[in-house]
Image (cartoon, rainbow, N blue to C red; front, top):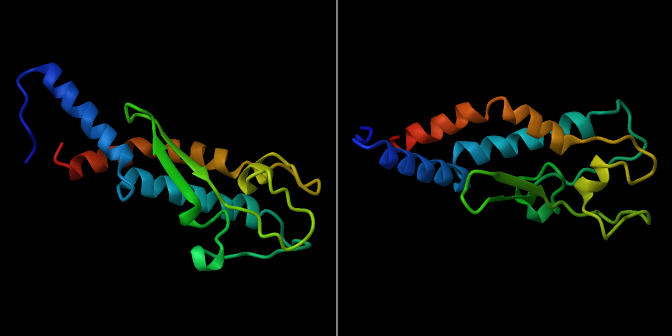
Length: 149
């Protein structure tokens, strides 16, 4: 059952708090679906971007595999101080399978900004953000309803 408010300021304060809680919840719909959008975008815009890559070595997912850009374990999420802005950073590291690694740059940044072997820019993180922004509101409402708001 939802809560009853008799004062608009009390309602606004409670709503702001619940929105922040939804944004911070690592198991909530907002973070879960945002991470899924990143994983889908990495698959579509990086791994499936070329029909036959010259070199490909995928690490799969999970820490035991070393994880790559599609590994949810490499997606670090944090919110702004008030909790209204969610940021997800892809912390995937290089495989170091061959001599051309850039250990000073994170892998996602290198892929997004064309910093290796003349490959075209593949802004999969930005595309994931663009895709997810279309459904973010629906997921936030789902989380709020789950919390009884």
